[in-house]
Image (cartoon, rainbow, N blue to C red; front, side, top):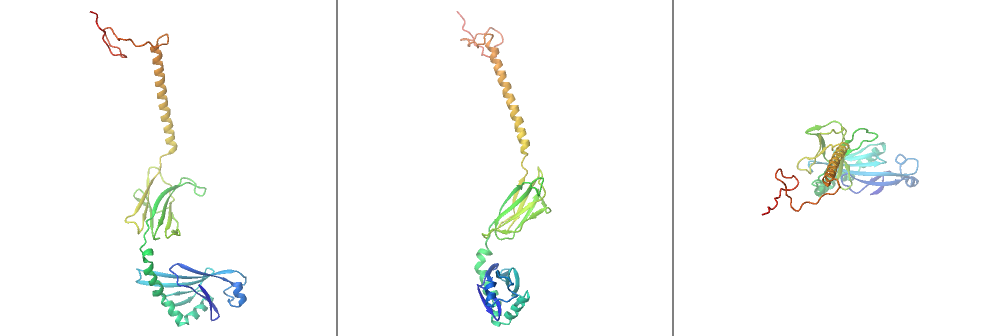
Length: 304
């Protein structure tokens, strides 16, 4: 980007930029003012560093069927003159910009160069950038999380749908409770660029979720063959689950305690008054009658 003096006014000419790409120049008014080159209405009285930006834009409708070229000249974030191919000439946005526009519009060669930018710059670059701008598709990754309450939003938590890493930027996100769409109490951020040719979006459901109901975040994007849904349900009450587990453990422990005491008492009863358990007989002979529930009714050999 270069800076040149044209007929007593200061203008900037930059290399042709792609749509949305900025060219900038920093102007030190102290140096220019000392040289007598910078006009007083462009540079304030105090000395400092200021920003000059030139932005070229290509607007496409239905491919290259209709193309609009816009070139903007901005000083310290204020646009002072611009060119619009639909208008066909420069238009001043400030008193200084009107002076610049009159001078540039009076130069036939310069104006022809600007008007040719629609074909030379926009249509030409469209063909080059179509594979990675127009045809590029990156599907989003979607997740739902429960945002804990805060001092600004006390009470129950809120559901947050995070839609990450998608391209292009156009996208639609909707919340559902069951099959019913929740169009109210939904807050979304702007579509934010990640800086790597992908975007992200956060959509918050301000209505607190209720236990026993199912919630869904539905995303529609050009990279998806069909809408993508993520479901979420309120997890079980952890405090109640812990209480039930404690009660179950207590009951199970009590059952084992009773069984242990019963087994110990049974051993003492069988041991007899001396506290010893008698050894089993070599041959369990029982008199006629009901068999013992402890040992099987063996028969003793009969003497001849």
